[in-house]
Length: 216
Image 1 (cartoon, one colour):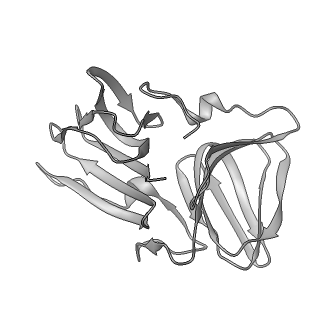
Image 2: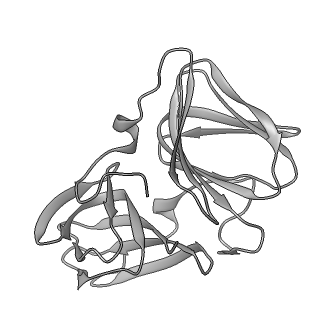
Image 3: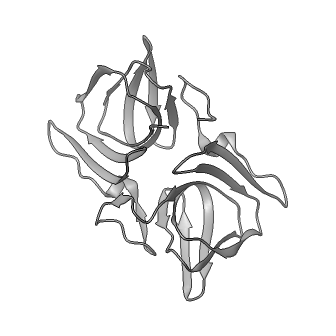
């Protein structure tokens, strides 16, 4: 994964738009591509037809997803699953930074996610007193994208994953333990684990995060 390891960072702050330009940064290539896009104000990515879905996660700014009969406004924190076999484009008046994840037709998608509808990852799972709540958003044998809600004081003990993982902090505050160091993290920030990197998660307050695990 083409991203810094073992420190808190911000996709939005690290991928600021350049005046008059659209910029893409490939983060992961494989069955499910991961790309950051930075769109300057009054720029667009022309509508094109793809045989797969694109999961868009807006890190900063505002944008519109458009196409034939499609017009959806997205702001920071919003997500959108594009339909397949329809021309879909993205444009912005004020500027936007977002992550795009390619989702194949046969990937197992949670029934709570509908193509063509705007949603927020943080609203997919509730907080439950004294518990951790998990929801698989989409997965296949090479990728797993899950949303988790931690009640204050709960967490995951130190362990290692069989692949690389990218965290999106969605709500509240927590601490990521990584290779013996603790890293406070809050909503809007990100973290990247290397494959087999020892890590833990603890909610210092109620905390929600999404975790994108790649196994390629």
